[in-house]
Amino acid sequence: MPACLELGIQIQSLWRASTSALIKKINDLCFSLPTQRLISNDINFHDEESTPDSIYIKSLLSCSTNPTYLIALIDSISVYFETIENHVDLTCQFSSGDNRDLLRLIIFISEIIYLNILQKKFILTWNFIESFFRCLTKTIPNSTTIIYQLLNGTDQIVSCCVLSKSILSIFEYLYQRHGIILSSQYSKQFLQSYLSLIEPDNRPLTQILILSFNDLHRLYCLTKQIQSIPYFYRYYLRTIAILLFRLPIFNSFIRIPTQFWEQHHQDVNKLQFGTNDYCLSAFPLDLLQHSDIMADYIERISFVGWLSRTQFQEIWVTFLAVINQSNQNNDDNEQMTNSLSKEEILETNATQW
Image (tube, rainbow, N blue to C red; front, side):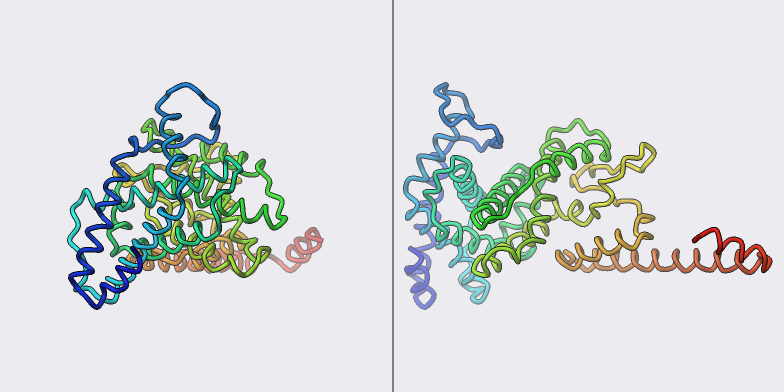
């Protein structure tokens, strides 16, 4: 099927027939699956009871027995989105249902990878993971693609969280294969911090997001160790992490310095989820007065970048506000020093050593 699409770039009738066949196969596959569910970390693969969770997991695992067919589907999606990038006239006017099925297939593939890694059977090869990563780089590289726009909707928060869980599992699997010891205690500690430093919100999606923040934090920490694994994997791992962090629902979290979550003060200003977009409110900018926190913030911004011109302006204004505040503090300290007598200055300096 990917070959037919590539040939169809020069023959429009073949292109239309190939894209129609692709959408039909994706529609049929998505229709055969149960309604999407968020898979728990504690999965009993030997559960004989016919619960909605067990039925859903068994359906996914049964589909994963034919990886060649799945690779052909996701490679075809990659070819389609790569082609319309350079040949806008070949863009097909899919229905909203077709667009959702395209996204559903991508999430479905990520779930299959997650389950197979969790089951420790590893029947999926790197070719399968690489095809999945390539598909993500073609479908969510920027805000203009239909898949990115769908993921931006609040009705797809579960899909975003599934994606983060699956990508983290791939990172951990590859890192462990190359001898990197991963600690889980650090993540559990931060999960408690999220619960303490974010205002309680009774909406179900906020609870799902907080758990996903734990995955994102762990994933960000792993990107700092990316030099420890073979160069062969690095490009895709780095690119996929950045694409995930640039999803609007996650971007407000990933830009918050780690040191904010390490605070244990009861009087700190807690963050809040947005009423409509579920994004976190801004962290206290006073923290950026500390050089280590500012360094962490700059590192995050440099790694992820900004989503829009407006966000760039907000970041720039933040930097200016912090710099002006620092200069004002220095001026105040200088005036205070000038008002001291010579004896008081000597005494102050002496007590600092």
